[in-house]
Each structure stands twice: as structure tokens, then as C-alpha cells.
Length: 373
Image (cartoon, rainbow, N blue to C red; front, side):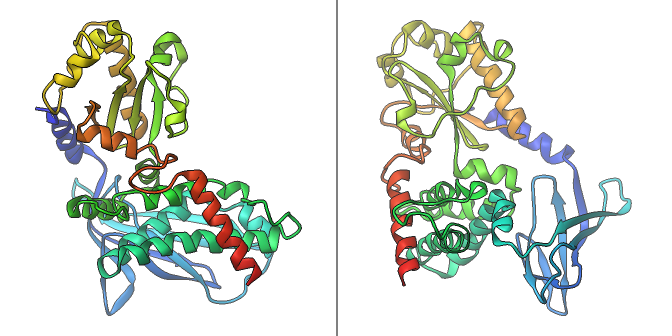
């Protein structure tokens, strides 16, 4: 009953979403570049390592190509990348889709860091961890994440900010959230101590196939202030989704109502001091104590009340933005949804790991040690 709507939506989307069958993909590069490896779910023939075979691929999947430099490129020129996909459409037509990308070449390290793609970096790091987990330990995988962040930021400090004070942690503008995403990766189901085997396997499978736009919110969920949205007149009055809050308890107020979503699951959290009228409108219960006495997996039924209509309108807008029909869970004191909600507040210290400030201090110490050695 809880996931009835999601099952129907996922089944319908699986039938109507854009997809390709019997596909073969090849990535070509201009002189000086070559494809080192691919990451994702596919098949490669030993006798033909340049082609990637995909029995089926849809708009919710992606393949990552890792490039390597085979010779020095001329600064000021352009290099070219081309991905060609030969496939059969669902109508039975054999087609080819080609994407070509031209990128400027620079020998200035500062320019490279300025143009860095944080989402691509995070995707590559997540897939590297997902690929090494089956044959490695959690400690080694966690060390890989932190070492990668430290190596990148130490290189920036060495070549782009050498004159800065050693007591300051200098972050490149394009990668200023890299430590935050790294911490989220360390506190996620893949690398968290005590995580269930099926949750870890699902996380690794998702990270190896999801596109970047779906991967990022899984690492760092979005926290929305629902009661403030109501005070401002609702989704229609504000003209869209409200701005997300910092994923920390410090962003939450007594008596507040918050929606936390990661593109797969949404949680509605109500503080114990929430006004009884809002509880009645949204959940149909008279008090917070009554909510805590309700059975597990409390269903959130749409009601003909202003609060319920606003909540479901907000959830609809979030689903459209994420292109995902995420299930909604009501957080109650002492249940599994409460644990999942507070684990999603990545910047706080929890059983999953240290706080964001503590992790920044750790990264800073490791960078200082790397620079002095």
C-alpha cells in the first residue's frame, strides 16, 4: 500500500521512457588523447576493446569514459571528443546518435582548476569506489576517497595558491564543495560501518549506472522548509521550489516542518512543537503524541485541506525537478525513517561519521602534511 503509486509510476515510466536496444557505443578522441577505460554497466569483447556493447540503455543510465593523455597537446588549440551510439529504436529502426565536443587546451594549471567539473569529478570518484568495493576493504575504500580529495587540493595549493598562509584551507572556486561531497560519500551506505549488505549493493549498482543529475542528490540530499513555504503563500505564490537549506540540524527550528529528499526517497519531518492545526491538516492526527502512536509505515493520504494540498504540490514539483517519482515517508520518533532522515543531514556529526567542519580540519591537516613532506 505504501509504495503503490511508485510501483505504478515506475512501471509506466519503464515502458514509455526513451531507450535503445542492441546498442554499440564508441568514444573517439583527437590526436594526443585516448580512452583509458569505461565505467558503468556494459559488456566489452576482449578482441574489440574500443567498443562498448549495451543490450539495452535508457535515459536514466550513463557510461563514464576515462581519458588519458598520450602526447603533449598544443596550448591554445582545441581537442575533440566524439561519442557515437549505434542502436535499434523501440520501433525497430536502426539508428546512430553522435555527440561531438570541442574543448580548449591550456597549459595553465589555474585555468584547468577554474574549469573543473565538480559533478564529473564526484561521479568518477563514486564509480571508482563502487568498482573497488567487492575486492577491497571498507577502510581502503574510505582512504581512497580522502586521498583523492587531498591530492587534488594539495595540487591546487602548490601550483595556484603557494603564497597563501599555511593556516588557511584554500579551495578552488569550482571545487569548493568537493570535501562536502567526499564526506557525503564516506557517510553513505557504501562506506558506512554497519550498513546492510543489500543497501550497500543497491548503492553501488545505482552509482555505476545513474546519470550525474541523479547521482548528486543521493550523496547530498536537499532540505526544504515546508512551514516557511506555507507562511510565504505556498508553491504558487513563491513561483517554484524554495531554496534548499544546509543539510544540518542548525538549519531547523522548533515547531518546524521539513521535507528532505534525495531523488529516490522523501521524508517529511515534523518537530514535536509543530502547531496542532498543521498536524491535523497534513496528517489527520490531533497531536504529536498521537502521531508517535500510529502504526509503522504511516501512509500519507492526500486530504482536502490547505496544508495537505501544499505538501503534495511541493512533492509534485520536486518529483518533476528530479524526474523521479520518489516515495514519501513520515518521520516518527524511534522508527527507521527517523534514523534515515538524520543520516541525510550530512553536515552533522552522526553514527555514520564526523561533521563537515571536522572533516575539513582533517583534510587541511593532511594537505599540510603533504606539502611539508
